[in-house]
Structure formats: C-alpha cells, structure tokens
Image (cartoon, rainbow, N blue to C red; front, side, top):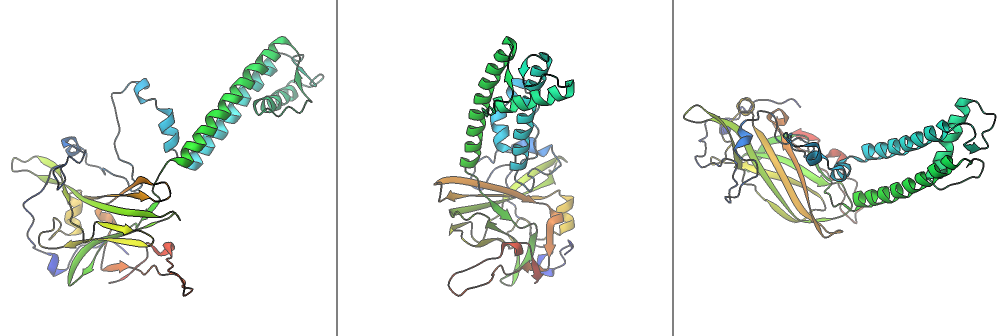
Length: 330
C-alpha cells in the first residue's frame, strides 16, 4: 500500500500543542541527544536500532575496541571473520615453513615448490589444530622452533575464540520484530498512530515498556531551525506479559503533537518517530532493549493490521509472525 497524505477531515486544522520539549522527556530527563542533534538533517535512528552517529576526533587507540566490535558483528560476519583469521594464520605459517627450504619438513622430499607450499600449509593446519597425522614433521631446528611458536599461537587463538563464542551466546539481547509500517488508523471514532511488534524468540519477555518520541525540525521566532523531541502519550505504555503481539497505539487527540499534520507536512518537517522498548528476559533475568524508528515515508493511511491468529488446535493460542506486516483496509 502506497503512502498517502492525510485527508481525513477530523485530522485537519486541529490545534497544535503549546508545551513541547527540546531533547528532554516529559519527566524532565535529558534524552541524551542534546542540542547538537539540531545540526543533523538525516535519520537519527536506523530501522535496525543503530544510531546514525559518527564519532570523530578520536585517536586510533581510543577507537580501537575489538572486543566490543566483535560482539556487535552479525553472526555471518563473525563466522566469516573467524574463517578468514583461521585461513590467514595458517597461510602465514605455511609460507614460513615453505621459506625454510626443502629440508625443513620431512615427507616433502622430491616435491616441487608448489607442492611443498601446499604440504607446508596443511602441516600448519595440523599443528595449529593439534591434529598431528605424522606424515609430515619438522626436521631442521628453525622448523621445530616455528612449530613450537605456532602451537602456542593455536592454543591462544582457540582459548580466545572459545571466550568470544561464549560471550556472544551469553550476551542478553532482545529479538523483537517491529512492523515495517506505521499506520494512521481509526480508533474509537477518531484516529491513532499505530505500529506493532512481537518476540521472535521462544524465551519470554515480561514487564515490557515502550516509549515513542516525535522528532521534527521547526523554526523558532528568530528564524533558527531546531529539532524538537516530544514524547507521545500511548494508550498503553507497558504490558506485564508479552507472549503474543503488541500493537502500540498513540491516540491522535486535539492535544496530540501530530494533530492536524499531513504526511507531506511531516516529510517537510523531516519528522521521525523514535521507538524504545525495554523489558526483562525471563530466562536470563536480565533487562534487554530494542530500538527502531519510522519515517513519514513509512506511514500508511486507511489500513489496519491483519489478524495474527494462526492455526488453532483448540488447546492453545497461536500467532503467525509471517503476517506481522500484513495490512487490511480499515
């Protein structure tokens, strides 16, 4: 469904609220965005929850945080980096064994130079992984010293990778899936702003809380463009249990910050709806967070979310998460 402008008469010419906040929440707390956020015109928060911020002015030592960067990598990138590291280390040691000459390793006599390189590489793999088939072995003193060094590197790498794998598996994260669209849908005779979400994991989340911030640029009386942040009041901002889906609703009342605004006006204001969700992972007994944002181009008018109820065996509730983004005419 294509994004449309709001044409509903009840949404037009409604008064704008007078009380708003500049990077400050309704409870008076600093949102952590500050006045510097006024200078950026792009999206503050990406849909995947990452902030669209680049940190400059740091030295290499200050930027160098491999542990945190590795933990933040996706699993495909992490496994690809592990494979590249494994092959790279063995290639380096293989080249080192090969450079020691034809008499450095036993079992390679009479081989051509390319064959010796392959044998040296496979011997490195056997040494690194402590396999030791016995077909090839070090002969010269330099080859034995290199074998000792590689065995030490192998032990350290295995210990390091084991710790990284454990840290990645043990790191508490929320696997909340948000709908791709933000709806303006009918609500108790009026209109509301809606999105929905569901837990992708079998582990349960409890005491879930949601906050939605309305960010946009406005002009001050002296002509400056400032980015303002206004918390949107929700129909329900917390749920105790989260086994099914949750449709988060902001009723568009006359007091709502978006009352009277069309999608075109929201785009002109470079508006953005920032979403923060936090709850407790019951399995880990740890608080987890999830974030996303919606742009006016992702707003859909005249629709509502389709029912998620799946096949029912008569004994338990089921939901079909493949229908999380499906819409129906409102």
